[in-house]
Amino acid sequence: MQKQRIASFVAGLIFAVGLGVSGMTQPHKVVGFLDVIGDWDPSLVFVMLGAIGFNAVALRLITRRDKPLLNAEFFIPSRRDLTPRLVIGSAMFGVGWGMAGYCPGPALVTSSTGATQALIFVAAMIVGIQGERLFEALRARAKASQEAVSM
Image (cartoon, rainbow, N blue to C red; front, side, top):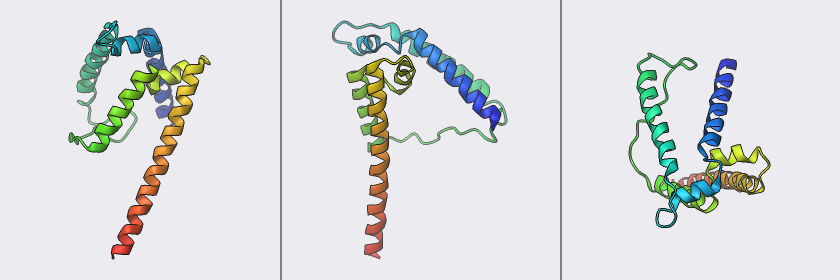
């Protein structure tokens, strides 16, 4: 368990440094990339291509092993279907990213500097996460009570 925590910390640290070096923690850079009609900044394309290329090679090499180094088995998603929940959630994520210039990882990294905009984003993100959990709990409770009534 200790090795997993250390590995998680190191992976998070590398991710945070990568976000900083690539410019992903700068909202104006992200918004410039998303502004394909106006003053488009294509530099983040190279960040994405580098990440996709590295991940494609690493995934192939890692999954050749019988099992991961720090776990009993690999957890690789097998479903490839699109659900309305996935599409709506992705759209909400994209709109929020475009409006704020942050997605969760860069916002967390930037909030460590005390930047007000990032701190507000992280607070709103936490409220949104807790709101979704509450919504899902209420939805599950309503479904269970509906099933109990119909029996």
